[in-house]
Image (spheres, rainbow, N blue to C red):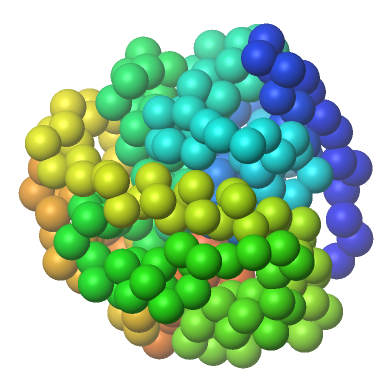
Length: 271
């Protein structure tokens, strides 16, 4: 798989966000948001499977990859504000917002704060309440809270490997590690500190956008109970369960993920 051209846009607060773009500029905009310590590259296996009729943007959020790495601004409202500013800069009125893991929480925050700009929502390996998640607390206590630069590549490799239930291309996985190594320790600490403050339980019922919840049944980070909470709170939401898939299910089954994403977006045009 060849990598697309990486572009960059500077937001009004002087944060620069890297992104890749593909597809018909007249097509429905689709914004892809990655998980913590990932980048646009998280969607590299998916992009070739998406039709040219979709106008797709895979973003690298602040603190990650080749985007700006400010010392602060790593709460979900910061990421969501960046997304709105990105859409303003590229003159995107509204879009389907697709988020994996941390990106799915950014997507939830965005859909709550910017309902008129959320044409649809796809939540992959998503959380409602990080605060009560023992695995997030455990990794914070064991490693993240005291993480310093340079971040140990073995720690990064183990962290990313833990998101998988099935093997992926060694070349792609090496790229994942390379992207994660660009993330400074202060971003790891700030992002996870933000996770531990987050509970959307009282707010997600405000989400009105058509929503698809996708989960792998071997996800060791994000339990099924979180998906049930999402679906109970978001009226009319749908779900798909991937068998034998882990937290990073779009790495393991990119063609199926792309197909399900396209099918969901096609239903939006029929509303």
